[in-house]
Image (tube, rainbow, N blue to C red):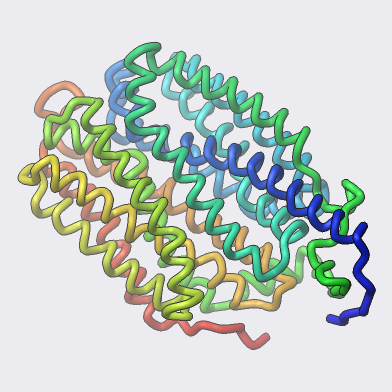
Length: 438
């Protein structure tokens, strides 16, 4: 890196102000798409019981429908980063968010399990590129010492979508039905795609603006050597300790997507006999806890513990503790305790955000994008795995009424992610922070 002195002029200052203002609008546009992404991710927890009743779905079939979003998301993780680099983040986000709108319409018009699953898969394909492409935007519009802060904010904002998918979605479904509710979301997705194309620009130079590194009269120039696709994949997937992190996140992120984004809804209604409205209100505590947990975890890893591993390790251990009442006290908790339980579940789940920085710091900076994309494959592969497997476990029990399963079914299902987390933590204890020697 070299710094070339340059005298600052009033015109330079005006351009820098314009840069900061315009990148804020870009960040807002991306945030809206990410809110929709999180909404679609978490919505099955509320709409799942409705689908089981209307289509007479078995638990494993509902698990399959819900998991299709995550399989598609995992598939697009690495290609999404490559497209954002070659085609540009603006076109990538616009085209794929539009595709998500098509998937949303297919889901809302679904007349069979296959049609529902297809719609969910297309939605997952569409929104699967958003976060990776957003990281490309942050790299081009923000300085290196700003990106961590804004990526954490983006994750926290995304959980607003998960909040909307609880009580507000229950209210909307109660007034216009689940089909019209998801048709409305699909229309909003099309609108968001149009906004993204109109607002997002790949680089400041597209708007005649200076680089974000042009501050205080100095232009910081960094020579970046782009690695080949083969070199990137070989380096990332050829690093042994990457898998210690990936296995942990497969269960860490995957388990609370399986529980919080799908099976917690039927659990609350079957085990505790809560109404849809009250169950949605309790479920809202999960993303609310994430809204607080994500930025807190980022701050702790940067400023307090100054370690990604410590935040992930201890955060996951705390998260495991919340499975004790879910499994062993099922059916005996008060509503107030359920509110506290799901808030704590989300709060401790928020520590997963340190994984992205942790994965990047294993490698040289030029491999950072591939590292994030590769880790996303494990995150969302875990989400797909746990949603389906938990449903399969529930389905092994005889229902006590139509679409109503006994407490033991959910105790067995929730034991699956708990065991996965314990295994992941044990393996992650051998993980060593820092760059891998190549």
